[in-house]
Length: 227
Image (tube, rainbow, N blue to C red; front, side):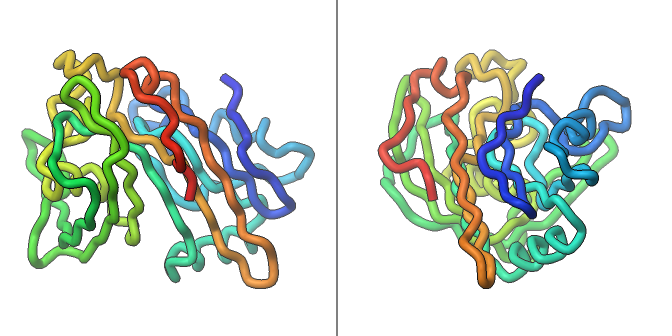
């Protein structure tokens, strides 16, 4: 597997993470992004380090820091909300509204039978996502999501609790790919755009092309998918 590089300079890489590639090694073993970090050195002595997380199923823009000082600065940029993120997701359903925002407090719950998941709860951590509808096809909807916060599973639970329909293929908040739901091979979420603002330097800007599995479901690149 070759990892596409979307942006490169002396302190940062942005890669187009393939769907179903976990960032960290699974407990049960198997491949992960760790297997590709040496090839992503690109002449540097250090292997780059992931700055943030994408779920295993999620494809698209992932920022890597090429040294510890850059990692610290980028972490602070995320904490200070100096990062703009755009995601494309396919809902397993249709909605009447054209755009809006979802503000929910999210909390983590777990059970022995079902494992852990996020829920909307008044005592949870606040989260905010702006969204707009891009297209509809065969009872599904392509949505552009712009999360203002970075909570775990934020877009996935915002789709279900805020828009009333889960992401297509989501095994936790929807019916999952094994149900044959719309032919989705995975949770249909793609990190399409990323901008990281830097003091005294031009921002890091990257956009990831629409994945082939989105296209197979009949969706094309929207007019303005980037940040």
